[in-house]
Image (cartoon, rainbow, N blue to C red; front, top):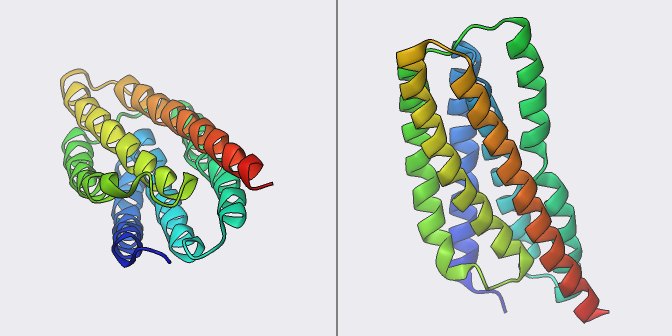
Length: 193
């Protein structure tokens, strides 16, 4: 039987991530931020993962493991979004508006800290699925601190590079999380075979 507190926590994380995806996406387009656009794609990916986890929690261990393998691929979506925005940034090398970048990063940090603290107690319940939810929230906290720092450095330098460097870091963290989730899901799948 699925823990109802776990299901509620993951559903709340999904709803919060979907809501902040909209906020970050609009701000990213408005100020031309590579890191915010990559992070908004990450919020959308987190919402999708968490909604899928809510559905999959009642499934058997083998089916959950298969879903975990699929989710490891979903974790790569922000890296694709980053590459797309990076190409666009080089074609129009204007730094993002630093104050809006910083404030939006602070809002994202608040959402992700809340989700990470809410999900940490469940990270080992439900196997690779709930671990994926926790890892996504944890990685996002680190990314948001980077976005806030990029806003401060951009205010001082008026350079596009802090935004680009943070975007690269977000892409690298999502690649690492995808590998961790894939490995855990593959081991669960082998154990159930």
